[in-house]
Image 1 (cartoon, helix red, strand yellow):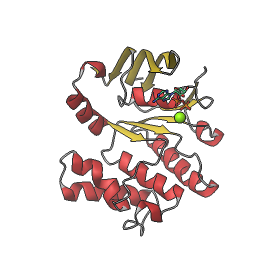
Image 2 (tube, rainbow, N blue to C red):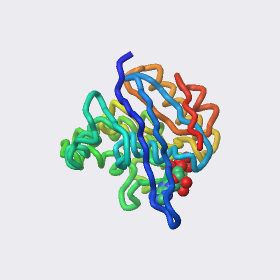
Image 3 (cartoon, rainbow, N blue to C red):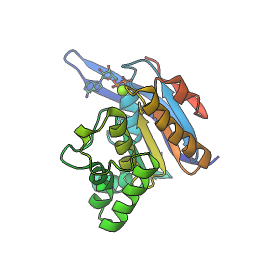
Image 4 (cartoon, rainbow, N blue to C red):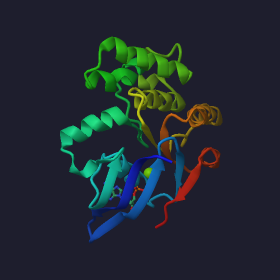
Length: 219
Ligand code: ADP
Ligand code: MG
């Protein structure tokens, strides 16, 4: 199986009032190009920190990280953000939609910021919003949407660039069963299409059961 992401011995230490907290302690993993991997573990076990490291949103204190053969830790900030914008889609644990922008504008934003044409970015935003069942709510602002709808807009935004690697931090947490099912259905379709690698942190057995592999984060 061809590997898209290879992490070796990643560690991340946060300074704390007394000493320090080792949130991620020597994690090594490989993700296949079309693999769906779930990461489970108790709250505080370092899952979000690991996701930030794997998506190169945070720098590890130690270890190495390769995306499609490129050593991410050797890139300049600018090269890194360009690569991230092209190849990685990120759904953060906290709502990160911009409150002053509509659902459509939020979903199109990564394309616009990357310098893609307006038309192309908005076509893709409409495509993903529609596929996520958000037809008719394009003009809504985030605060006018339910939690599940906001999550879908954030997912449409993460998919704006047709990323090769999709990193999802608890994509179904705090959703009602119907909203959870909609996200699960989409992830199931992605898995079956086998065009993208997915790594999802989750507490949901339903989501974990979709994965090819379940990794456990322990303290
Ligand atoms: P999880 O997502 O599994 O709940 P996190 O990665 O959010 O775990 O946190 C792992 C550990 O690192 C926790 O002990 C948390 O308190 C600590 N931590 C997380 N982010 C920070 C930060 N920015 N500064 C200091 N400590 C942090
Ligand atoms: Mg977390």
